[in-house]
Length: 515
Image 1 (cartoon, one colour):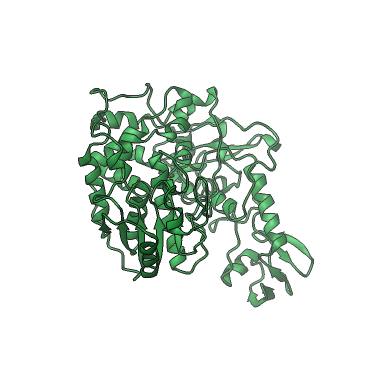
Image 2: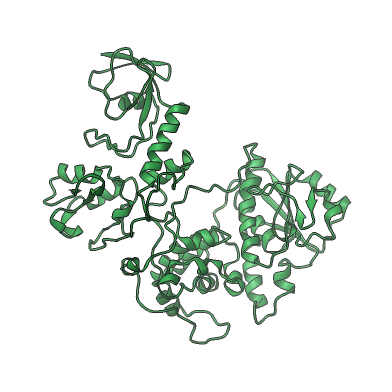
């Protein structure tokens, strides 16, 4: 048996055990990209580096076996810097969007591609669930939003953007909401002042997290400018009332006709665990709230919306005047994260945002590659014209125009997770223009996007282990080496038995399941 120390803990393991395996047996998780439990070690990604204090050297823990007397440290500043560098080298050649540009451009950060795919599959109810994770009033926004997301749509570069706003509208108009899952009460209560789009969204997302919300507004009915500044032709009252009713069904309490004076605000602060101010333009309210302000509105910490009073948060037009309702709705969702963190005595960080790889504008040579997963044809318009929405058939046809430019492995991509953790600079080692994106979709189960590949070799070794006739291999030499099916055979010939296993093992989403 071999005796060594890992992070000051003594351990005995059998000779021939890798440092990584020894560390895992003690519960220490070492980052890795090219490691796979079924396969022999293969030093490639250089992410699993650790420090051996005996020699003073960094070493790859996946391929170095334990030696008697080793003194290993798995995580320190030097190790972290080494891992960051390794990731930045990998990212220098990795080409692909993590999140679709439409989602990045959406002020509410809605998962637009997923909505599109569900609509295309005639699953409006499921599409509505996706939309309402980020947008509390989809039917309302589907009528009034100027759609900044469509300006960023990759399909716009090919011909015309997908009609995202109208697709969102039909989910609100025709999708049936699933029954609200009751969350155990936290015993906390929060006041939201102002029942416009920002306040309604904040109330909705806080209530869903087990917070008892009381919504105050000077109007007798909730809605703010959505109710008073828009005509019925643009936003029918029955549409607004239906979506506000859905918010109230979560258990939100509404106190309309409430004028917020300085005394009333002080009372609310005293009676509630936290307060969200969402009253709209601030001009006449500065003295009422007694919060640090500027000529445009209340001062807040940018990512958390916390004001100069630690238990008070502010969102929407009270920060600065804007007629973009989707921004106010997005802030309402985001502030719910900050308020929850405050109530739980956690560090207040706001809504989590992961590392996001971006490819930028598509080039002409890539149009055909992206259209492989879409349909030809320009933007669809409702046959009824004017302010009418899509029929279900029109919506399905339009949703199919989506290019599926988000990553299929967005929720479990190791490269993204580690890049976020180590705060990677994707451009640090960029020395040339990015590679053009290609897609191999001629397989029933998986898609292969070679430009996302980091050459970890897992697919090569798995297809060899399971005796695929063709499998995957390294093609070319030196810097030009790529991974692909030998002899230029089709993807379906390379992966006949192992497609699902290989897709699940891929650490980047280069090989991923179609759905």
